[in-house]
Length: 498
Image (tube, rainbow, N blue to C red; front, top):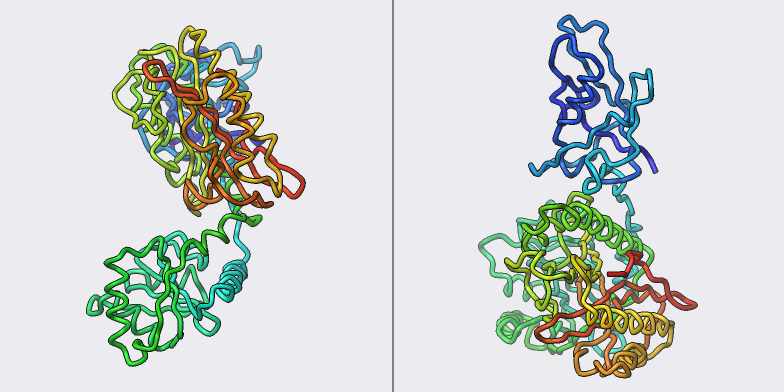
Protein backbone atom coordinates (compact mmCIF):
# COMPACT_ATOMS: atom_id res chain seq x y z
CA UNK A 1 0.00 0.00 0.00
CA UNK A 2 1.64 3.21 -1.12
CA UNK A 3 1.93 6.44 0.81
CA UNK A 4 -0.76 9.06 0.34
CA UNK A 5 0.48 12.38 -0.99
CA UNK A 6 -1.17 15.50 0.37
CA UNK A 7 -1.31 18.41 -1.99
CA UNK A 8 0.63 21.10 -0.15
CA UNK A 9 -0.49 23.87 -2.46
CA UNK A 10 -4.10 23.08 -1.68
CA UNK A 11 -3.53 22.60 2.04
CA UNK A 12 -0.95 25.27 2.82
CA UNK A 13 -1.24 27.79 0.00
CA UNK A 14 2.18 27.07 -1.49
CA UNK A 15 3.64 27.53 -4.94
CA UNK A 16 3.39 23.91 -6.12
CA UNK A 17 1.58 20.71 -5.21
CA UNK A 18 4.75 19.51 -3.48
CA UNK A 19 5.56 22.65 -1.50
CA UNK A 20 3.47 24.73 0.85
CA UNK A 21 4.49 27.88 2.69
CA UNK A 22 3.75 28.67 6.31
CA UNK A 23 4.23 32.40 6.59
CA UNK A 24 6.01 34.01 9.50
CA UNK A 25 9.48 35.28 10.29
CA UNK A 26 12.14 33.55 12.37
CA UNK A 27 9.84 30.74 13.43
CA UNK A 28 11.29 27.80 15.31
CA UNK A 29 10.31 24.20 14.56
CA UNK A 30 8.07 24.13 17.62
CA UNK A 31 6.08 27.04 16.23
CA UNK A 32 5.77 25.27 12.90
CA UNK A 33 4.28 22.23 14.57
CA UNK A 34 1.84 24.48 16.39
CA UNK A 35 0.77 25.92 13.06
CA UNK A 36 0.49 22.49 11.45
CA UNK A 37 -1.61 21.50 14.44
CA UNK A 38 -4.00 24.36 13.76
CA UNK A 39 -4.52 23.59 10.09
CA UNK A 40 -7.86 22.29 8.82
CA UNK A 41 -7.52 19.42 6.39
CA UNK A 42 -10.25 18.53 3.92
CA UNK A 43 -12.03 15.25 4.61
CA UNK A 44 -10.68 13.80 1.37
CA UNK A 45 -7.14 14.28 2.67
CA UNK A 46 -7.99 12.44 5.86
CA UNK A 47 -8.97 8.98 4.83
CA UNK A 48 -6.65 6.04 5.11
CA UNK A 49 -5.27 5.03 8.49
CA UNK A 50 -2.11 3.54 6.97
CA UNK A 51 -1.17 6.63 4.97
CA UNK A 52 2.08 8.41 5.75
CA UNK A 53 2.62 12.14 5.67
CA UNK A 54 6.27 13.19 5.39
CA UNK A 55 7.15 16.80 6.07
CA UNK A 56 10.64 18.27 5.62
CA UNK A 57 11.59 21.68 6.97
CA UNK A 58 13.74 23.94 4.81
CA UNK A 59 14.95 27.29 6.16
CA UNK A 60 17.85 28.02 3.87
CA UNK A 61 17.47 30.63 1.14
CA UNK A 62 14.32 32.19 2.54
CA UNK A 63 15.07 35.85 3.16
CA UNK A 64 12.19 36.57 5.50
CA UNK A 65 12.75 33.54 7.64
CA UNK A 66 9.49 31.85 6.66
CA UNK A 67 9.50 28.09 6.91
CA UNK A 68 8.56 25.82 4.02
CA UNK A 69 7.30 22.27 4.29
CA UNK A 70 7.87 20.05 1.29
CA UNK A 71 5.90 16.85 0.93
CA UNK A 72 8.17 14.44 -0.85
CA UNK A 73 6.29 11.18 -1.37
CA UNK A 74 5.39 11.31 -5.05
CA UNK A 75 2.95 12.72 -7.52
CA UNK A 76 -0.23 13.97 -5.80
CA UNK A 77 -2.45 13.71 -8.85
CA UNK A 78 -5.77 12.02 -8.35
CA UNK A 79 -6.70 13.59 -5.02
CA UNK A 80 -10.15 15.11 -4.88
CA UNK A 81 -10.98 18.43 -3.20
CA UNK A 82 -14.48 19.41 -4.12
CA UNK A 83 -16.24 20.45 -0.97
CA UNK A 84 -15.41 22.63 1.97
CA UNK A 85 -16.02 20.40 4.98
CA UNK A 86 -12.94 20.52 7.20
CA UNK A 87 -11.92 19.01 10.48
CA UNK A 88 -9.22 20.22 12.92
CA UNK A 89 -5.85 18.52 12.77
CA UNK A 90 -4.55 16.52 15.70
CA UNK A 91 -1.42 17.70 17.42
CA UNK A 92 1.53 16.28 15.50
CA UNK A 93 4.23 16.98 18.08
CA UNK A 94 4.28 13.41 19.38
CA UNK A 95 5.35 12.11 15.96
CA UNK A 96 8.53 14.21 15.79
CA UNK A 97 11.69 12.18 16.43
CA UNK A 98 14.04 13.91 18.85
CA UNK A 99 16.47 16.22 17.08
CA UNK A 100 14.96 15.60 13.67
CA UNK A 101 13.53 18.03 11.18
CA UNK A 102 11.31 15.42 9.51
CA UNK A 103 8.33 13.65 10.99
CA UNK A 104 6.22 10.81 9.65
CA UNK A 105 2.61 10.50 10.71
CA UNK A 106 1.48 6.91 10.50
CA UNK A 107 -1.70 7.69 12.42
CA UNK A 108 -4.64 9.75 11.24
CA UNK A 109 -3.56 13.37 11.12
CA UNK A 110 -6.97 14.58 12.25
CA UNK A 111 -7.85 12.25 15.06
CA UNK A 112 -9.93 9.12 15.34
CA UNK A 113 -12.68 10.45 13.13
CA UNK A 114 -10.49 11.45 10.17
CA UNK A 115 -8.33 9.43 7.85
CA UNK A 116 -5.71 10.23 5.24
CA UNK A 117 -7.07 9.61 1.74
CA UNK A 118 -5.23 8.32 -1.29
CA UNK A 119 -7.87 8.67 -3.97
CA UNK A 120 -5.44 7.31 -6.55
CA UNK A 121 -5.64 3.90 -4.88
CA UNK A 122 -9.06 3.45 -6.44
CA UNK A 123 -7.97 4.30 -9.96
CA UNK A 124 -9.55 1.52 -11.95
CA UNK A 125 -8.29 0.74 -15.40
CA UNK A 126 -10.04 -2.53 -16.20
CA UNK A 127 -10.71 -2.44 -19.94
CA UNK A 128 -13.25 -4.62 -21.68
CA UNK A 129 -11.69 -6.66 -24.49
CA UNK A 130 -12.72 -5.05 -27.79
CA UNK A 131 -14.31 -8.25 -29.08
CA UNK A 132 -16.54 -8.70 -26.02
CA UNK A 133 -19.50 -6.75 -27.40
CA UNK A 134 -19.35 -8.76 -30.63
CA UNK A 135 -19.43 -11.95 -28.54
CA UNK A 136 -22.47 -10.70 -26.63
CA UNK A 137 -24.24 -9.86 -29.88
CA UNK A 138 -23.46 -13.34 -31.18
CA UNK A 139 -24.88 -14.88 -27.99
CA UNK A 140 -28.07 -12.88 -28.46
CA UNK A 141 -28.40 -14.07 -32.06
CA UNK A 142 -28.12 -17.66 -30.83
CA UNK A 143 -31.02 -17.06 -28.46
CA UNK A 144 -33.06 -15.40 -31.20
CA UNK A 145 -32.74 -18.51 -33.37
CA UNK A 146 -34.57 -20.41 -30.65
CA UNK A 147 -37.45 -17.90 -30.64
CA UNK A 148 -38.35 -17.96 -34.34
CA UNK A 149 -37.59 -14.31 -35.12
CA UNK A 150 -35.27 -12.84 -37.74
CA UNK A 151 -34.23 -9.65 -35.96
CA UNK A 152 -34.75 -7.80 -32.73
CA UNK A 153 -35.11 -4.13 -31.87
CA UNK A 154 -33.33 -3.60 -28.54
CA UNK A 155 -34.53 -0.41 -26.84
CA UNK A 156 -33.69 -0.87 -23.14
CA UNK A 157 -30.91 1.61 -22.29
CA UNK A 158 -28.88 -0.88 -20.24
CA UNK A 159 -29.42 -3.61 -22.83
CA UNK A 160 -28.08 -1.37 -25.61
CA UNK A 161 -25.08 -0.53 -23.42
CA UNK A 162 -24.46 -4.20 -22.66
CA UNK A 163 -24.50 -5.18 -26.33
CA UNK A 164 -22.62 -2.21 -27.83
CA UNK A 165 -20.74 -0.23 -25.16
CA UNK A 166 -22.71 2.90 -26.01
CA UNK A 167 -23.35 4.84 -22.79
CA UNK A 168 -25.97 7.28 -24.06
CA UNK A 169 -29.73 6.94 -24.16
CA UNK A 170 -32.68 7.53 -26.50
CA UNK A 171 -31.27 4.97 -28.93
CA UNK A 172 -32.00 1.47 -30.19
CA UNK A 173 -30.09 -1.44 -31.67
CA UNK A 174 -31.51 -3.40 -34.59
CA UNK A 175 -29.75 -6.76 -34.60
CA UNK A 176 -30.13 -9.81 -36.80
CA UNK A 177 -27.93 -12.28 -38.71
CA UNK A 178 -27.32 -9.73 -41.46
CA UNK A 179 -27.92 -6.42 -39.69
CA UNK A 180 -26.44 -4.61 -36.68
CA UNK A 181 -27.33 -0.93 -36.66
CA UNK A 182 -27.31 1.48 -33.73
CA UNK A 183 -30.18 3.94 -34.27
CA UNK A 184 -29.58 7.28 -32.58
CA UNK A 185 -29.55 11.04 -33.11
CA UNK A 186 -27.02 13.76 -33.83
CA UNK A 187 -26.33 14.47 -30.15
CA UNK A 188 -24.51 11.15 -29.93
CA UNK A 189 -22.78 10.94 -33.31
CA UNK A 190 -19.28 11.61 -32.00
CA UNK A 191 -19.85 9.57 -28.85
CA UNK A 192 -20.95 6.54 -30.86
CA UNK A 193 -17.87 6.82 -33.08
CA UNK A 194 -15.67 6.82 -29.97
CA UNK A 195 -17.47 4.14 -27.95
CA UNK A 196 -18.61 1.81 -30.73
CA UNK A 197 -15.92 1.73 -33.43
CA UNK A 198 -16.90 -0.41 -36.38
CA UNK A 199 -20.60 -0.50 -35.50
CA UNK A 200 -22.91 0.89 -38.18
CA UNK A 201 -24.93 3.84 -36.92
CA UNK A 202 -27.99 5.54 -38.36
CA UNK A 203 -28.13 9.15 -37.14
CA UNK A 204 -31.26 11.26 -37.37
CA UNK A 205 -31.58 15.04 -37.18
CA UNK A 206 -34.34 17.08 -35.60
CA UNK A 207 -36.31 16.87 -38.85
CA UNK A 208 -37.03 13.15 -38.38
CA UNK A 209 -39.17 11.50 -35.71
CA UNK A 210 -37.67 8.50 -33.96
CA UNK A 211 -40.43 6.02 -34.98
CA UNK A 212 -40.01 7.03 -38.63
CA UNK A 213 -36.23 6.61 -38.39
CA UNK A 214 -36.58 3.16 -36.84
CA UNK A 215 -39.16 2.18 -39.46
CA UNK A 216 -36.81 3.22 -42.25
CA UNK A 217 -33.93 1.13 -40.86
CA UNK A 218 -36.20 -1.88 -40.28
CA UNK A 219 -37.67 -1.56 -43.78
CA UNK A 220 -34.19 -1.72 -45.33
CA UNK A 221 -33.30 -4.81 -43.29
CA UNK A 222 -36.57 -6.55 -44.29
CA UNK A 223 -36.88 -9.08 -41.43
CA UNK A 224 -39.90 -11.33 -41.82
CA UNK A 225 -40.38 -11.41 -38.04
CA UNK A 226 -39.20 -8.57 -35.82
CA UNK A 227 -39.05 -8.91 -32.03
CA UNK A 228 -39.63 -5.97 -29.67
CA UNK A 229 -38.70 -5.92 -25.98
CA UNK A 230 -42.26 -6.27 -24.73
CA UNK A 231 -41.27 -5.70 -21.09
CA UNK A 232 -39.82 -2.28 -22.01
CA UNK A 233 -41.79 -0.94 -24.99
CA UNK A 234 -45.03 0.73 -23.85
CA UNK A 235 -48.37 0.17 -25.55
CA UNK A 236 -48.18 3.68 -27.03
CA UNK A 237 -44.66 3.12 -28.38
CA UNK A 238 -45.69 -0.23 -29.84
CA UNK A 239 -48.62 1.40 -31.65
CA UNK A 240 -46.49 4.23 -33.06
CA UNK A 241 -43.72 1.88 -34.20
CA UNK A 242 -46.17 -0.55 -35.78
CA UNK A 243 -47.89 2.29 -37.62
CA UNK A 244 -44.60 3.75 -38.86
CA UNK A 245 -43.26 0.37 -40.00
CA UNK A 246 -46.55 -0.45 -41.74
CA UNK A 247 -46.27 2.70 -43.86
CA UNK A 248 -42.91 1.68 -45.38
CA UNK A 249 -42.55 -0.25 -48.64
CA UNK A 250 -41.72 -3.57 -47.01
CA UNK A 251 -43.39 -2.91 -43.67
CA UNK A 252 -46.72 -4.57 -44.42
CA UNK A 253 -45.00 -7.95 -44.72
CA UNK A 254 -43.10 -7.63 -41.41
CA UNK A 255 -44.61 -9.45 -38.44
CA UNK A 256 -43.90 -7.75 -35.11
CA UNK A 257 -43.66 -10.11 -32.15
CA UNK A 258 -43.33 -9.44 -28.40
CA UNK A 259 -40.24 -10.91 -26.76
CA UNK A 260 -39.37 -10.31 -23.11
CA UNK A 261 -36.11 -10.38 -21.13
CA UNK A 262 -33.89 -12.06 -23.70
CA UNK A 263 -30.92 -9.72 -23.20
CA UNK A 264 -31.51 -9.82 -19.45
CA UNK A 265 -31.09 -13.59 -19.62
CA UNK A 266 -27.59 -13.04 -21.00
CA UNK A 267 -26.84 -10.39 -18.41
CA UNK A 268 -27.51 -12.82 -15.54
CA UNK A 269 -24.14 -14.51 -16.10
CA UNK A 270 -21.27 -12.08 -15.56
CA UNK A 271 -17.98 -12.32 -17.43
CA UNK A 272 -14.58 -11.50 -15.93
CA UNK A 273 -14.91 -7.80 -16.79
CA UNK A 274 -18.28 -7.54 -15.08
CA UNK A 275 -17.04 -9.43 -12.03
CA UNK A 276 -14.02 -7.12 -11.75
CA UNK A 277 -16.25 -4.05 -12.04
CA UNK A 278 -18.56 -5.40 -9.33
CA UNK A 279 -15.60 -6.05 -7.04
CA UNK A 280 -14.50 -2.45 -7.53
CA UNK A 281 -18.00 -1.12 -6.84
CA UNK A 282 -18.05 -3.14 -3.60
CA UNK A 283 -14.59 -1.92 -2.62
CA UNK A 284 -15.56 1.73 -3.05
CA UNK A 285 -18.84 1.21 -1.17
CA UNK A 286 -17.01 -0.42 1.72
CA UNK A 287 -14.29 2.23 1.90
CA UNK A 288 -16.88 4.99 1.77
CA UNK A 289 -18.85 3.34 4.55
CA UNK A 290 -15.80 2.93 6.76
CA UNK A 291 -14.93 6.59 6.36
CA UNK A 292 -18.53 7.61 6.91
CA UNK A 293 -18.76 5.57 10.09
CA UNK A 294 -15.50 6.97 11.42
CA UNK A 295 -16.22 10.58 10.53
CA UNK A 296 -19.92 10.89 11.24
CA UNK A 297 -20.98 8.19 13.66
CA UNK A 298 -18.10 8.50 16.12
CA UNK A 299 -17.98 12.29 16.26
CA UNK A 300 -19.11 14.22 19.32
CA UNK A 301 -21.64 16.11 17.22
CA UNK A 302 -23.20 13.03 15.64
CA UNK A 303 -26.50 14.09 17.18
CA UNK A 304 -26.65 16.89 14.61
CA UNK A 305 -26.49 14.50 11.64
CA UNK A 306 -29.84 13.74 10.04
CA UNK A 307 -30.68 10.70 7.95
CA UNK A 308 -30.63 12.84 4.84
CA UNK A 309 -27.30 14.46 5.80
CA UNK A 310 -25.82 11.03 6.37
CA UNK A 311 -27.06 9.65 3.03
CA UNK A 312 -25.68 12.63 1.11
CA UNK A 313 -22.33 12.45 2.92
CA UNK A 314 -21.95 8.73 2.27
CA UNK A 315 -22.64 9.22 -1.43
CA UNK A 316 -20.15 12.07 -1.54
CA UNK A 317 -17.45 9.94 0.03
CA UNK A 318 -18.07 7.16 -2.51
CA UNK A 319 -17.89 9.65 -5.38
CA UNK A 320 -14.60 10.93 -3.98
CA UNK A 321 -13.26 7.39 -4.11
CA UNK A 322 -14.16 6.88 -7.76
CA UNK A 323 -17.88 6.08 -7.86
CA UNK A 324 -19.95 7.75 -10.54
CA UNK A 325 -22.88 8.00 -8.13
CA UNK A 326 -24.72 5.99 -5.53
CA UNK A 327 -26.18 2.77 -6.92
CA UNK A 328 -29.64 3.85 -5.69
CA UNK A 329 -31.16 6.27 -3.19
CA UNK A 330 -29.24 5.44 -0.02
CA UNK A 331 -31.41 4.29 2.88
CA UNK A 332 -30.51 5.67 6.29
CA UNK A 333 -33.25 4.63 8.71
CA UNK A 334 -33.06 5.56 12.39
CA UNK A 335 -34.81 3.45 15.02
CA UNK A 336 -38.36 2.39 14.17
CA UNK A 337 -37.98 3.78 10.63
CA UNK A 338 -35.74 0.76 9.91
CA UNK A 339 -38.90 -1.38 9.93
CA UNK A 340 -39.67 0.12 6.50
CA UNK A 341 -37.54 -1.93 4.06
CA UNK A 342 -37.44 0.83 1.40
CA UNK A 343 -37.57 3.85 3.67
CA UNK A 344 -36.54 7.25 2.27
CA UNK A 345 -33.98 9.10 4.39
CA UNK A 346 -35.57 12.06 6.14
CA UNK A 347 -34.91 14.62 8.86
CA UNK A 348 -34.57 12.29 11.82
CA UNK A 349 -31.31 12.69 13.67
CA UNK A 350 -28.97 9.76 14.22
CA UNK A 351 -29.11 10.40 17.96
CA UNK A 352 -32.87 9.88 18.18
CA UNK A 353 -32.52 6.10 18.57
CA UNK A 354 -29.77 3.69 19.61
CA UNK A 355 -29.46 2.09 16.17
CA UNK A 356 -29.58 2.92 12.48
CA UNK A 357 -29.98 0.78 9.33
CA UNK A 358 -27.94 1.80 6.29
CA UNK A 359 -28.52 0.29 2.83
CA UNK A 360 -26.12 1.67 0.23
CA UNK A 361 -24.03 0.88 -2.82
CA UNK A 362 -21.75 2.45 -5.39
CA UNK A 363 -22.24 2.69 -9.15
CA UNK A 364 -19.14 2.90 -11.34
CA UNK A 365 -18.85 4.93 -14.54
CA UNK A 366 -19.30 1.60 -16.37
CA UNK A 367 -22.72 1.24 -14.73
CA UNK A 368 -21.92 -1.78 -12.53
CA UNK A 369 -23.13 -1.59 -8.95
CA UNK A 370 -22.88 -2.90 -5.43
CA UNK A 371 -25.58 -3.30 -2.78
CA UNK A 372 -24.88 -3.68 0.95
CA UNK A 373 -26.78 -3.26 4.21
CA UNK A 374 -25.66 -3.03 7.83
CA UNK A 375 -27.30 -2.11 11.12
CA UNK A 376 -25.13 -0.06 13.47
CA UNK A 377 -25.53 0.57 17.16
CA UNK A 378 -25.26 4.27 18.02
CA UNK A 379 -26.20 3.87 21.68
CA UNK A 380 -27.03 1.15 24.19
CA UNK A 381 -28.20 -1.85 22.18
CA UNK A 382 -31.73 -2.99 23.15
CA UNK A 383 -32.04 -6.69 23.97
CA UNK A 384 -34.67 -7.11 21.25
CA UNK A 385 -32.36 -5.64 18.63
CA UNK A 386 -29.60 -8.00 19.71
CA UNK A 387 -31.99 -10.94 19.36
CA UNK A 388 -33.18 -9.88 15.91
CA UNK A 389 -29.64 -9.30 14.71
CA UNK A 390 -28.57 -12.76 15.83
CA UNK A 391 -31.47 -14.43 14.01
CA UNK A 392 -30.94 -12.44 10.80
CA UNK A 393 -27.21 -13.13 10.79
CA UNK A 394 -27.81 -16.86 11.25
CA UNK A 395 -30.36 -16.78 8.42
CA UNK A 396 -27.98 -14.94 6.11
CA UNK A 397 -25.17 -17.40 6.74
CA UNK A 398 -27.56 -20.28 6.01
CA UNK A 399 -28.63 -18.66 2.74
CA UNK A 400 -25.06 -18.03 1.66
CA UNK A 401 -24.09 -21.62 2.49
CA UNK A 402 -26.82 -22.85 0.12
CA UNK A 403 -25.41 -20.97 -2.88
CA UNK A 404 -23.78 -23.19 -5.50
CA UNK A 405 -24.21 -23.96 -9.21
CA UNK A 406 -27.43 -25.86 -9.79
CA UNK A 407 -29.05 -24.76 -6.52
CA UNK A 408 -32.72 -23.94 -7.02
CA UNK A 409 -33.45 -20.27 -6.45
CA UNK A 410 -36.37 -21.05 -4.13
CA UNK A 411 -34.24 -23.51 -2.13
CA UNK A 412 -31.65 -20.83 -1.35
CA UNK A 413 -34.45 -18.56 -0.16
CA UNK A 414 -35.90 -21.39 1.91
CA UNK A 415 -32.58 -22.07 3.65
CA UNK A 416 -32.55 -18.58 5.12
CA UNK A 417 -36.31 -18.22 5.58
CA UNK A 418 -36.46 -21.40 7.61
CA UNK A 419 -34.14 -19.92 10.26
CA UNK A 420 -36.33 -16.85 10.67
CA UNK A 421 -39.54 -18.87 10.75
CA UNK A 422 -38.18 -21.26 13.39
CA UNK A 423 -37.26 -18.25 15.53
CA UNK A 424 -40.90 -17.11 15.38
CA UNK A 425 -40.41 -14.10 13.08
CA UNK A 426 -41.53 -15.57 9.75
CA UNK A 427 -44.42 -13.14 9.28
CA UNK A 428 -42.00 -10.21 9.59
CA UNK A 429 -39.81 -11.29 6.67
CA UNK A 430 -41.96 -10.43 3.70
CA UNK A 431 -39.54 -9.96 0.80
CA UNK A 432 -37.34 -12.33 -1.16
CA UNK A 433 -33.89 -13.27 0.04
CA UNK A 434 -32.02 -11.48 -2.73
CA UNK A 435 -31.59 -10.50 -6.35
CA UNK A 436 -29.00 -10.17 -9.04
CA UNK A 437 -26.96 -6.98 -9.44
CA UNK A 438 -25.19 -5.56 -12.47
CA UNK A 439 -26.06 -2.65 -14.72
CA UNK A 440 -29.30 -2.44 -12.72
CA UNK A 441 -29.54 -2.69 -8.96
CA UNK A 442 -32.29 -5.31 -9.26
CA UNK A 443 -31.66 -7.96 -11.91
CA UNK A 444 -32.25 -11.63 -12.44
CA UNK A 445 -31.86 -14.11 -10.90
CA UNK A 446 -34.17 -13.54 -7.96
CA UNK A 447 -33.90 -15.53 -4.74
CA UNK A 448 -37.46 -15.93 -3.49
CA UNK A 449 -40.01 -18.55 -2.54
CA UNK A 450 -41.72 -18.23 -5.93
CA UNK A 451 -38.63 -17.97 -8.15
CA UNK A 452 -38.08 -20.60 -10.83
CA UNK A 453 -34.70 -21.65 -12.11
CA UNK A 454 -31.25 -22.47 -10.81
CA UNK A 455 -28.06 -20.61 -10.01
CA UNK A 456 -25.26 -20.65 -12.56
CA UNK A 457 -21.55 -19.82 -12.30
CA UNK A 458 -21.18 -16.11 -12.94
CA UNK A 459 -24.39 -15.06 -11.18
CA UNK A 460 -23.85 -12.29 -8.64
CA UNK A 461 -26.67 -12.06 -6.11
CA UNK A 462 -27.43 -10.23 -2.91
CA UNK A 463 -28.28 -12.20 0.21
CA UNK A 464 -30.32 -9.92 2.46
CA UNK A 465 -32.72 -11.49 4.95
CA UNK A 466 -34.52 -9.12 7.27
CA UNK A 467 -36.93 -8.92 10.17
CA UNK A 468 -39.09 -5.79 10.45
CA UNK A 469 -41.11 -5.14 13.61
CA UNK A 470 -43.55 -2.21 13.39
CA UNK A 471 -43.04 0.47 16.05
CA UNK A 472 -39.66 -0.98 17.00
CA UNK A 473 -37.39 -1.29 14.00
CA UNK A 474 -35.83 -3.72 11.57
CA UNK A 475 -32.62 -5.61 10.94
CA UNK A 476 -31.33 -6.48 7.49
CA UNK A 477 -27.84 -7.76 6.70
CA UNK A 478 -26.86 -7.75 3.03
CA UNK A 479 -23.80 -8.96 1.15
CA UNK A 480 -22.98 -9.58 -2.51
CA UNK A 481 -22.14 -13.15 -3.49
CA UNK A 482 -20.60 -14.58 -6.67
CA UNK A 483 -21.59 -18.08 -7.78
CA UNK A 484 -18.35 -19.89 -8.68
CA UNK A 485 -17.92 -23.16 -10.60
CA UNK A 486 -17.52 -25.07 -7.34
CA UNK A 487 -19.56 -23.02 -4.88
CA UNK A 488 -19.60 -19.35 -4.04
CA UNK A 489 -17.48 -16.37 -3.02
CA UNK A 490 -18.71 -13.60 -0.74
CA UNK A 491 -17.39 -10.48 -2.47
CA UNK A 492 -18.11 -8.06 0.36
CA UNK A 493 -16.11 -8.11 3.56
CA UNK A 494 -17.40 -5.55 6.09
CA UNK A 495 -17.94 -6.73 9.66
CA UNK A 496 -21.54 -7.64 10.40
CA UNK A 497 -21.60 -6.89 14.10
CA UNK A 498 -23.76 -4.11 15.54
